Length: 372
Length: 262
Image 1 (spheres, each protein chain N blue to C red):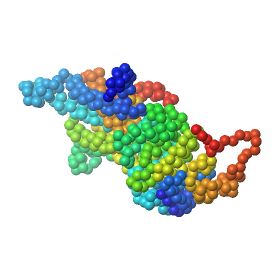
Image 2 (image 1 turned 90 degrees about the vertical axis):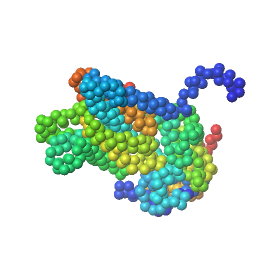
Image 3 (image 1 turned 180 degrees about the vertical axis):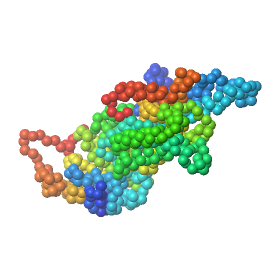
Image 4 (image 1 turned 45 degrees about the vertical axis):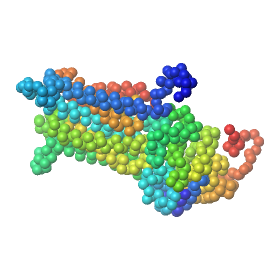
């Protein structure tokens, strides 16, 4: 750099600082990467807070200290140890994974159907999963004992998984004709399938005994309480698999925002993309609903919020949705178990109470602008 | 070269295109013209590999039905008629979508090609705007830039690439119609080929090297515009009597793109 250049640069230093911001105009990938870094940090904080806080005064730090082999193992720290390791930890991990699964599934559905309103909950997948689970709770006794024993803790997630997958495939078949998916048909069919699943669930509730009724109610409201390592082992592998597979669909989902024909023109194997996305969503949502019940609005609010900040590029939107979904669900869970401690508010109530007004606010703010 | 032989396309049981044969050579603009519903777009979609069809379609000698989507995508790009986008992409992000396959998908080339493609459609400085906030004509030019960037080099690995444009100038003002047609001509001069569905017969006469007139799903006439565009052919295909190179009487002004200079 010549002296002249240096002088000119220092004279216009402040302007340079401002223009140095984006690599190129209209390119939000720098903002997106920064957002991802921030979200990773927030995720770690949320996980730590979630493990450290709760209705009891058990100290996570002390337990971890004891684990690392330092301090004395008294009866008190034994109790703390159970609270931290066997109650809070599985709850925090699974809560994070469920939030991630729901938010990312929302983003995938919205991309696939090219509609910002698509959501596993709104289009009936969640109710299909719940129906599968309720079916297992009520009729589980008539399932061959051998099958029950071999599936063990996986029975419920498996039933929810199958329920979600079947609903999703049915929905997709109904909405797709001649290779073209109709968004209007999808939403209407989703409403119909939700109603149908609700009716069948109603029949099952009518048949259920008291214990089963309590189990079923747990589904409807959604909760992260009662998470165990067994449940983690049952649900986490499916969710993790989906979380790993789905980001590979980013480029295809980006292309498909221009339409399925355009995506094919750009070199995407459209049919394979659709099936992979659908199976991943059904798996992730099915497993989530299986262990936590119906938790609404995460799948629609999180991707929406992120698109406002980092844009709709799925290479960033999908991982960011997963992270923010996990963070928000853990936040909601911390609220759920502390505002009326030692009792708990079902987390589905919290996400709906906070999510619905927020969604309305976004809707009102962006009303009149087409396409968000 | 794109070569279609005895192409027949049926949609939900109805035959839309009957045994159409057409050849699009590298270095030439091939225009498909004809009245509404004559099968122009359907023919183009079949050649793009998007619609199932009967008959033979080859791209540089390869059967297109045997090629993977990505193999097609590096050799031909398709501009559809106007498409709505549900998400808030910026103009740069839309153009960049074209750059996910082929030799230009690498980060260091993407920014440069995106900017050049936007400049080529006279949208320099629009990269940061939101697609949804543009006018229809501007959106159409963004799509042209995206399609162009997908096969940025007119010749790849010694084989020509082809732009397939479905009504590329339908929403454009006269100056930008010329911009896009000249872009197509430059692509051909670079060794690539262009197939365009056109409604503007004057632009077709000015720019097309080869012209295919369709009617009722069949080819009515094909050849150089100077040979094909006759009074009788116009009447037979479009259903109204017009005089080629006829000058209207006094009182009503007329203006032709042929006279443009800028």
